[in-house]
Each structure stands twice: as C-alpha cells, then as structure tokens.
Length: 391
Image 1 (tube, rainbow, N blue to C red):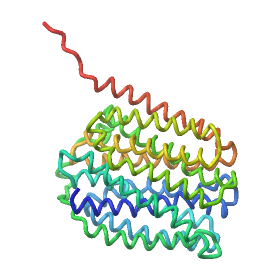
Image 2: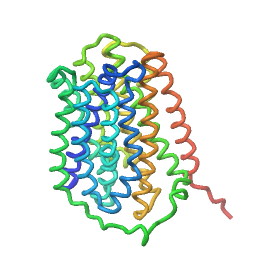
Image 3: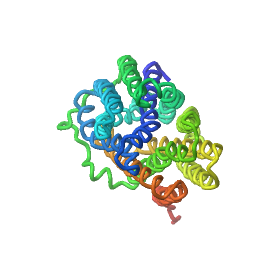
C-alpha cells in the first residue's frame, strides 16, 4: 500500500457510501412514489441502466483525459444527480427520480474502474492484494451508507430526501480525495496502438468466464440485496433493523478484501472462485429456511462474502485476458455485462418480491449460481496442462 492506494481506498469507501445508500432507499422511495407496486425497484434498475449506457462514454473519456480527470468529472455528476433525486423525492416525482438515478450511472460506471486502477498503482507482484485492499475500502460505505440513510430519514416531510442531499456532500468530499491521487499513466492514442479487436478479446475462454462470473455474481447479489428492504418491510421489521442487515451485508462484501488477495496467492484463484459459489448457495439455503431477523442477517452476510470472493477473483483473473493497450475497451466490456446483469436483476427483484415472494426469489437465484459453477468447471478443463506422452 502506497499513498495513492490509500486515497483510492478512501475514494472506494465514499463511492460505496453512495452506492449502498442508493440501494437501501431507492426501492423504498420508489415503492412510495411508483404508480404500481411492481415498479418499486425501477429506480434501482435505472441506476444500473444508466451505468451500462455510460460504459462506452467512460472508456472514451478515460482514454482521452486519463483516470483522474474522468473520476473527477464523474463525482461532479454524482453531486448533481443526488440533488435531482432529492428534488424528485420532495416533489413526489417518480419519473424524475428515475432520471436522476440514470444520470448517477455515469459515476457508477467510473467508480467500477477503481479496482482496475488499483492494479496499476501497485507493484507487479502485488496486484491481487491491491485490488483486494481497495475493494476493502467499501467497509466505510457499509457502515456510513445504511446509517446515514437511517439518520437522515426524517429530515424532511418526504422520507429519505435528506439522504440524497447528504450524498451530494459526500461527492464533494470525494472530489478532494481523488485530486490527491497520482495515476502514473501516459495517454495512449488508440490510432497508434489499437491492440486486438474487442471481438477477438471476448472470444477467449478466460475472458468469457471472468466476465460471466463477475456479471452473474453481481446479478445474484443485487437480486437479493435490492429485495431485502421490501421483504423486511413486508415482515414488519423497522428500517433500523433493515439498515443493520444491509450494513453487515456490505461489511461481508468488503471486509474480506483485507485477506482475499493473500488467499488467492495461497490457494489459487480457482479455489477462491469455487468457495464464492459455495457461500452464495449457503446464503440461499439460509434465506429459504426462515424469515426471522437472524435469517436475513446471516444470509445477507454470507451473500456479501461470496460476492467478494467471486468478484475479486474474476477481476484478478481478467488481468490475464488483455494487453495494456486493450485496457479501456476490455474493462468497459466487462463492466457493461456486469451492469446489464445487475439491471435485469434489479427489475426482476421488484417484480418477484411483490408478486411471487421471497421464497421464489431465492429459488430463482440458484440458476445463475449453477451457471457460474459449470463455467468454472469448463475453464478448469481449458486451463489444465496437456500431458506430453514420453517417447
């Protein structure tokens, strides 16, 4: 860890403060303002759709202006979009709320590149640890996000309008943090060093499995996390208890970052990926076994740890699938599929929880987890060294 990595870790924490607060309150605000109950999680989906739409633009901005300028522009967008969401909540404008979260997606698409930037700021022998530690910065968001939503819930007549206003302040702080980071990179002219076509990069088995794992891991995590506030409200839990569950879920997502990189070096990236799948399955089994506070708390915590293992490992493995000159388009493609899966899961979450219930929602998550497991088996076969027969 050097100075730049410490500041990037703090920036990650502030980003997760924004992200977790959005997840915690968007569904509830949406439920209060939506014309139909099944549209409750549309603001969550709009946030992710905005992120997916921004991936190509973000890749171009990063290539032209560099990491630092792009990250700073994104934080200005975060400041503006938070104020739009606050105004929409106060004025009870559901569609304006969705517009605000779509705009916020530009920030999300940029901040998703913090983990890749971490690898560039570290020594070549410590990339796994750098990615892992920067992701661990999300612990700040785990603690601050849900609690901030709870503290500011009743600042105004409309619940949670104060949380959006507070997020605008968080964005301003993050601008100061990012300004302290030096990204040692030279701008690459795409006409001089284009690298391989994106279609060729995406045909590699390694790229396919890394992208599939990252996307489906995020999709499953978002499917269950976005539905949790609505499910707990239906079970008549107070928002304070919901915030507590979300806090420990996000701690589970990022606290393992302090050792995931070391674990990858010790037992290998494939075993960490397999463990991540097992933890996600354990989460589903616990969620299906009951709807007490303990069941929600334990299931969401395991979901967070499982996500960390899958996401950190797939990010580390993806570094082997592209060259430095191919960085922007390869990372943009990975994030596009992550956002696509997350957007679909966000809308599905609202539809399923309001029409089918918590049980069917959890049963449905077994399908993508099975696909990840099969993809890992296929990659293991592809990477297995061929034995040379002796003469």
